[in-house]
Image (cartoon, rainbow, N blue to C red; front, top):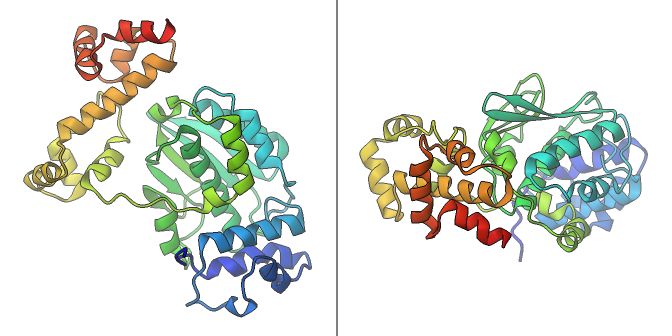
Length: 335
């Protein structure tokens, strides 16, 4: 049986916009098979399935994907149409740019864009008028939609560096710690999330059939909370994700960031069957293979992007990783 772990707060927050339009909240709860007595009962947690069914119930009733929480309606099917429009893109960066363009045209109350900020990029995803979103549910949901969709399209958990909000930490802040990876910042000028520019090059791997199943189940995947990897390797991976491959910090810097001694880090990584050198090498290897497979870059350009000062050194490392030179690897793919 599915574990109930979502705060009761989300029952009333999901109903708020529909009730403002005159729809009966208890009837919507009944459609989702949620007892009306659970409403405003803080100790009564709900499951992901129950929240999914309630969101679907409100979507059907209001015919509004924004749940009646925006000053302007967003017709049902808009998100699906955007996904279909973007699926043919080669990389995550292309999807984020095209999705932002799509929603700027369709939804006038959404301030959305992909912005470069040094070696990181910021995906601005911000309600221009949030007066109807009194519980911040729509703003939370919008950011979840793009973060979870991004991970699903590339079939891996992206280590987002930071998710930020233009309001103070709400009473249910603890829920944010479970929903959003990486650092959280409140009271910022706009809402959105940060990731390193290198993740824009991740390839889109999903098919049309997979997208159809994803959309039929929506918003199940968006509301699902991935299991947390508490390993030190995962924490170091997330930390390294903030840097270029050439500029990845050493053991001393990482130990200061994690408030651990270098000796403790080395010992714990050894217990996990790895080391800082192996973690960095794995990151470089995976990124090099992606670039050679998907990008129209020279071997020298790939070498530079994964942090090697000399192409010859990169070629030797690549052959050690894969058993093949970069040129032969690419030739095998094309042949």
